Image 1 (cartoon, rainbow, N blue to C red):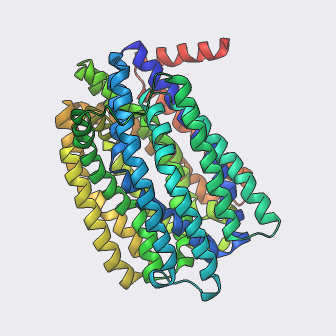
Image 2: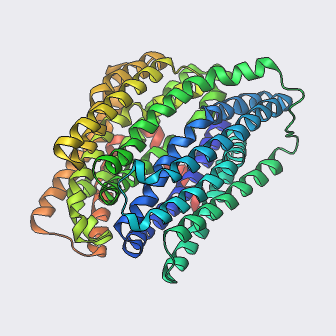
Image 3: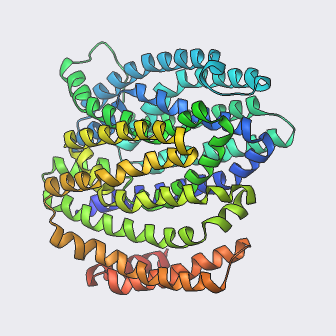
Length: 506
């Protein structure tokens, strides 16, 4: 792999890990604090608003990923004029879509009682919160998409993560202060949106510093650039729309068929799943623009290696995290939020189960998006989304909350074969090399460490924070040692030792 590409991927991945780690720690402590201070119902409304906002994010029409892809390509060629053209088109679209999103949220806020099961006493707070989010949406579209889109296209994730860290820390501090002073849902939503706005402004500032040549001009927009943006963004929009159905509809279905309070129990399980899966998946978070650059340089063999290595490391990282979490889910929930949330353990375990399948195509999906080869992925994502929505609605009526979770898990397991098939075909990967190079290398150490922890669980039941940390530490030593000796080749070990030496000198 080219040295320059390695440096970019490494820098961006480290930045993503730092940003995500800080945000995860903040959310980990903030979640139970907010739930206990606001109460289950008001907290449920806050999470519900995030789901609705996620859906309205669809109004970017897939432009932001298209922006990242094309900026990465044009930047590799040194074509600054084309970058300004693409950004100008995106800015105009986002300006219009931000206004549309704001109006839709205003309407949803007004009709809140008709849509969701909410206690009459807090309808006024729910509406006011929705109106605040509506104003933020109008600003967020042009600011967050343009600032973040330009920076990610230039492969400067370190800057977007800096803005994200500022937003997370300042937002958490404001929310803790306001709740401690006795303020409620409206104040929390307002503080959250203001600090997000400041983060968007910081992204725009960084983008202007790194690309001073960037000019937003509507007069000289060329038709071929508009077509280039929409040709790619159309498929991305379909993928994103399907993803929104998969990952955001569940809370809306719960709010309609059960009650908003049940969303909190779902969210507790989903947050555990999100932390455990997001951490390893960050290894491929900077891969899309890098793949776009490699594709522009005509390096298919490098893309194949990128897929195999990244999938192996991502799977290993996931197994290191998921094994103790699967075994000790209940005590983790008990310590984190309280004993009443131990019932969410089964939901968390089901969510984690599907990740064992999804990891096989995650890196491939990022590479295919970066290279623009996403038609088949689009089709499969739509099938999963439709299957998910239909199954969730049917099952929630018969078996309740667990039915919503199963509605998300089952479609992915059924469709995984098709995702892997298209990734293998496009990147030239065969099962006879994937199984020994990826699966066996990652899973053999995992089976051994899982056996050790299961034996430990028979004699030892952790009930305190330091005991949970001890269990995770034991798994880290066992799995990490086995993966290093069994899962890494000589070249990879040499690279790892070289990296440690460099870190030791700095």
